[in-house]
Image (tube, rainbow, N blue to C red; front, top):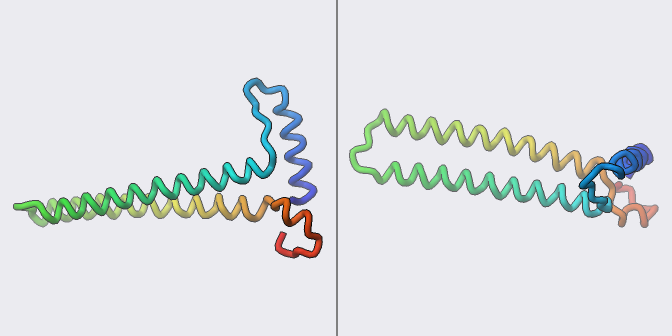
Length: 116
């Protein structure tokens, strides 16, 4: 972690130390929580896409489905895929922020490691 990030975290911890309900966490816990939240959001998006797939499959198996209804279902699925893709970009940005701004303690211990 850079000196400016360390100073920012220290000032944030000092400012929030008197906040009611504030739970102090180590930097490792914070990083793991952020990564876990990204993973959980990715999982939720995969479930959404799976539900869209099932909806399309069910529609295709319906008797008497006309072209207008099929196009309507397709537009709905397309809109959902675009929304999920936009959320994926936000998650990608969140992951890049975490990986670019927080250095793991194993990097601090190894002075020869240029990856941090």
